[in-house]
Amino acid sequence: MTIKEAPVTRVVIVGNGMAGSRLVQELRARDPQRHLHITVIGAEPDPAYNRILLSSVLAGSLTAADVEMVSPSWYASEGVDLRLGVAVEHVDRVRQRVLTTAGEHIGYDRLVLATGSRAWVPPIEGLVDELGGGGLGPDVAVFRTLRDCRDILGRLSGVRRAVVLGGGLLGVEAARGLAGRGIEVEIVHPLDRLMERQLDKEASQVLMSTLRPLGVRVRLGAHARAYDEVAGQRVLVLDDGVRVAADVLVVACGVRPDVGLAREAKLAVEQAIVVDDQLASVSDPRIHAIGECAQHAGKVYGLVAPAWEQAVVLAEVITGGKTAYRGSPVVTRLKAADVDLAAMGEVNADADGARGVEVLRFADPARGRYQKIVIRNNRVAGAIMLGGAETVGTVTELFDRSGPVPADPRSLIFPVAGTPATADPARMSDDELVCRCNTVSAGNIRQVCADGAGTVADVALCTRATTGCGGCRDVVSALVDAASCTPSPPRHGAQDARRRAAARVEVPA
Ligand SMILES: Cc1cc2nc3c(=O)[nH]c(=O)nc-3n(C[C@H](O)[C@H](O)[C@H](O)COP(=O)(O)OP(=O)(O)OC[C@H]3O[C@@H](n4cnc5c(N)ncnc54)[C@H](O)[C@@H]3O)c2cc1C
Image (cartoon, rainbow, N blue to C red; front, top):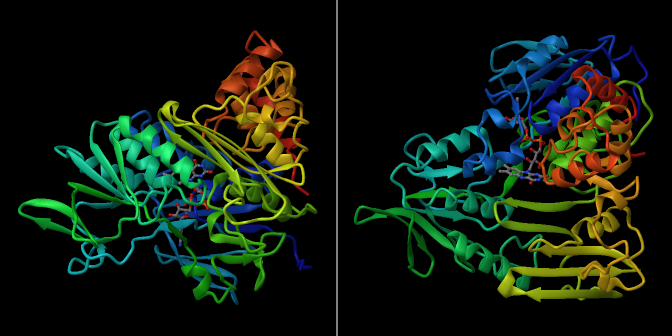
């Protein structure tokens, strides 16, 4: 549904996280004359930061300052009204205005909900401080925000043993981060494998044996009953009575989309806020939702690449472009020092008994390697690449663009010299994705190099490649080298290239 009325001038964005902060940049890139009056309201007091790098902050390899993404001074210089540490507590759809916790009413022509998710805390005794107002119990922490990170780090002095409750992606990253600080860590997970959404049982076994020498033990099939103090020691008590010593308990049991505002405003909410291809609520075309609080075509994404793709599409929509969001392919990468893992698509199609599926598998547990490629209709339908697989780039690319697998698909596991399955950046085709988080292709990078970008930092400034999870840094560096675009241009040269790149941003149609 489109709105035929006065042009949009007032845009209010609720949430200054990964999606909200990207949207405001995309809007300004399309609105250099500043016709739009943009207000961003963020409940967190910190400037916008890269949430996906929090595990590196926990591990101590990055500081809070390193993960800042968009500074408040940028908002000021762009004439964007930024309110940090302020939440929206009510949406008045009739008067088209929001009410903030600072008691202010702010009117909108378009409202964007980018409220993300909250950490979910399971109903286990001792996790929540019932007497102390419902906050987390003593020595219990969750892992979602910079503040959570500071909270965990603040509790670590004198801590010898930590338990991470939950063995999903976040749980594994948190455990690796804590182990990197010399703490004995145990992951307690109720299911029969780690990262059950991304791995099969065998991959989970290989991952567990990779984690063990790094100081992380894993207890599978374990159900926690209570977090308690026994004889002066904090312990996690399991269903079978076993007690696991835990000076600190980090709860990483998943997230729930933050949809309280939307529900109260009587917008359609299922798992998250239901939106159409223009990322507008199906209940109100003046209200949009992007990121983890949005549900598009039945899917709620828990990754940054879809959130940023949605931000690009929505910026186009709000500034009058004709475009539509069609969904995003999902590749998950674990960011834990000394553990290399990428997983995508239907990794358990064989176990699920799916028809017409061919599976290639290579396991070398002693060296921490496991690769599995699921092929359907001659396309990569899913893959697990654990342990520094050389072919991960090629497999990911085939998965992304649904390209046909090579005549001998074994080359997707064992690269054969002279076949395209070797991940040589210089031989990447122009449309091959390099930075998945920001949807930047090898061709985009070559172009900005030709326009004058001469270093990885310049390419980051021009295209944003490397500024998400950072996993593509080596490939970008190799492409910059291959383009031989030295010497480095002056800063304004890269900025010009940045503007040109923004003008060329491709919107998934
Ligand atoms: C430790 C960690 C590691 C991760 N690793 C990866 C990874 O490797 N790859 C990947 O793709 N993804 C990863 N993710 C997930 C990724 O961070 C999220 O998908 C992304 O942050 C979603 O962006 P968002 O803007 O929807 O939500 P968020 O980034 O959570 O932002 C939502 C913001 O809205 C604010 N807000 C909520 N309600 C209100 C309100 N009423 N008023 C004002 N503000 C409000 C919140 O305080 C928050 O700041 C990771 C997440 C975590 C926590």
